[in-house]
Image 1 (tube, one colour):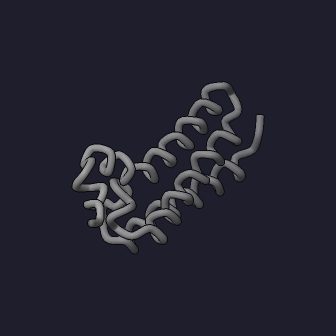
Image 2: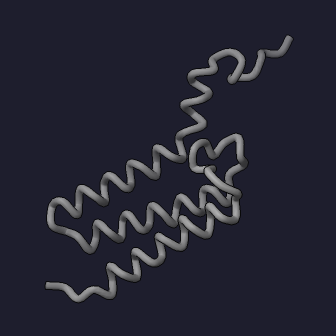
Length: 99
């Protein structure tokens, strides 16, 4: 006899595991914002930008049932918006002259 799938045995745990991509992105954004707060604004913004590009890549490669709350709109719109904002933020962080 085979075991039932995880979402039937432990629905809460399965729901948490589905949100791991979002958790990884939020942790990276928190690290970047912490760097900004500690007056390393350029590196911090680059970390946030990398997290957004990573979120776009995760949204592109993961199936809908695994991506969790990173899936808000259709896949192409999510990927273009997250990766586009990440690229624009990194370009802005690099282009602003240092003090």
